[in-house]
Length: 217
Length: 163
Ligand code: SF4
Ligand code: FES
Ligand code: FES
Image (cartoon, rainbow over all chains, first blue to last red; front, side, top):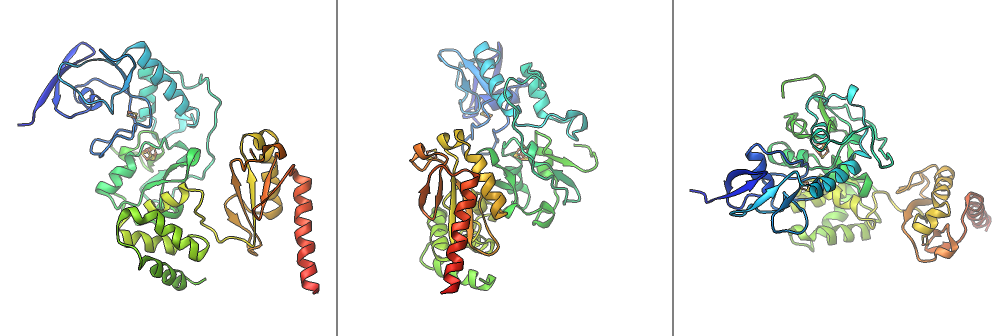
């Protein structure tokens, strides 16, 4: 038997496997914490999206739930004002370089960014930060799906699932603001070794990867 | 250089390395040292040798400024976009170079005369906006001066032809 620990998140008593992070403990027990960059089987958390802030009793500052290991007797709060302020700020910064065109976005009904906006109560059309978006061409070379790199939030979900279950053609390239999921030499996905399993599309939270025809996801 | 030649050179470099993934960067440096840049075929060879997905190698190559995807030109043009040069309109200078050479940053002209790229502060901010021409920092490079510098190169070339 796996050892379990019990802890409290948002006044709810929960149990989770020892060694689990606070993020997965919460998500597995039906408590939502905004997150984009945490991958369940990753060797180490990327901790790069800065959205998963929670407050833990006994700690002076909020912590990122994806790096905090759930400990016996821990008391965490996902709705503290400090944690939410940090999460909102991180999310607004992220959205400052994400095109807002929900009405004609193929991911409208599965978009995790909209879910996060709702959860954090952030108005997408009232972002305090200056808008700075990319103007890269959309890759529609693959018969199954399209890739709009302008909408990539660099979470790494597609890269990880493509290596695990696909052909491993996806990865990150370029630096700073230009960093994005792409293929070797930025070739068209249709020209790569992609075998169209579609896992990356199902994993993408941001509408960067979308199926050409709507299929049941 | 032909694809075959590129592969040969790359394999030659690979001979002196073990298949440790940590060798990726030293290998890339050595290959670039030999070829002047990292062509597609070279990256594919390296990826296969280390058992890495090619995109992983491409990710590293496009991350570090020291690696080039294009062959170097005879003359190198580096436009400073550091804070001071940015404030003094370095991006306008960059646009002028791009327009005059008809290439983007990180590219080489088809005649292999010039390659263009940006740098972030070369340490002589008082001369902003700075362009480093063949390792020599030039000060107050506005679009007019870009034209002047290119003209000087042209004269030099014509002079050589006459000799
Ligand atoms: S394409 Fe989608 S899944 Fe892949 S890194 Fe970008 S946002 Fe994440
Ligand atoms: S999920 Fe924790 S920082 Fe992204
Ligand atoms: S910013 Fe250009 S030289 Fe310092």
